[in-house]
Amino acid sequence: MRLYVPADHNALVKVTDEKNSPHYLIQTIRSFELNGVRVLSLSADTLGEARQSSLNLLPRYTLVVDEQEVGQINRLAGVWREVLFVSGLNWLLVGDITRNQYTGYHGSKKVLTVDTLATVDDANYFIVDVTESNDEVPALLVAATLNRWRKVSIRAGVRGLFHQKKRAYDLGEDFTRFTNRQK
Image (cartoon, rainbow, N blue to C red; front, side, top):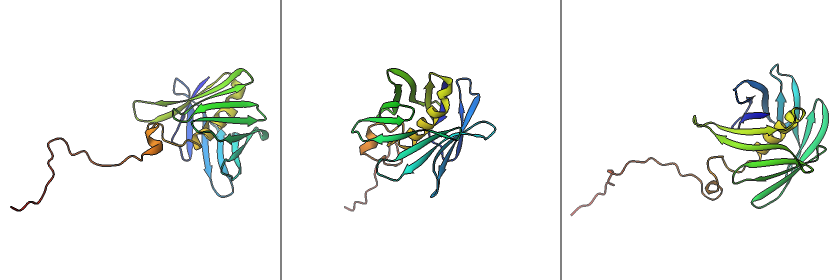
């Protein structure tokens, strides 16, 4: 199933399908006691959550689905390519941070694909393609975690890694700079 998750979320967002019908809610939690992401049903029941379990340079999240720990997602360092491993589920996630695209494998079988979509109304979404319906909640937890680890905004691309966008007004071609010349 293909699910659409808003990329820029702070508190609570709805996860929709191609027909824009809601399926899940994702809640981002940022506090001193609990730092993580929850996947909720439409009736606000907790289906799963990813809790940050270490405060290292390379953080670790524990994935809990139906109040049972199903795995941990560990971040391994890479330069342009990133490799992540979800222990417990035995998923290997390989992605490219310059394009914000990730693919998850269980052995040689593709489990999920996380990609980005920039829509016409200037809203950014993550597209999560899941092959089996019982993997939807862990896949959404992984996609939300990858969203937290995103290094640049979706539209900035590679240029956003090195140069910050300068905000300035475009005054047009016919604008001539005022200089105070006294002759």
